[in-house]
Amino acid sequence: MTEKPQLSPSQGIEGEKQYAEVTEKWFEYPIVVHPHHTDYAGVVWHGVYLTWMEEARIECLRQLGIDYAQLVALGYELPVIEVNLRYHRPLRMGDRALVKTKVQDLDRVKIHWDYQITDWESNILYVSGRVTLVGIDREKGKIVRKLPTVLQEALVKL
Image (cartoon, rainbow, N blue to C red; front, side, top):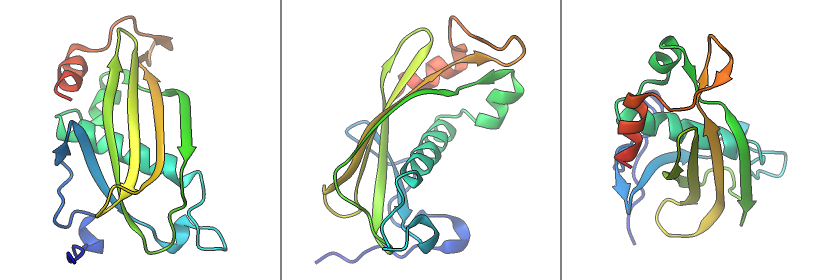
């Protein structure tokens, strides 16, 4: 039996598995289910999964050299235009899991991120899904016809 890594609450969730670890091109972001993530039955509320997925996506971009705040400062946004989730089994208070994400498709204006939320130690699948983003020029309020070069170059690494 393998020992679960100890997580430091003051430094985020890093443990033995680092944010930048990629397995089969998946970026892995560890999470722990805390009481505020759950309903009265101790089961993760369905909307929390989207929050974790966004955290994983933002951290993945940061690891690739794209700070989201800097992207916004340059005049770009990446709003979500479509979400598709499938709940396979519930996470419960105290569970530890990995939010795995990767860019599956990248075209001129859309970025399709695939997700799997799995058990920390096994491949038990809790949630799978896809989130689609588009690049927006903040000043004009319009979809950009081509993502910023720095963003395209970073995403190609995935």
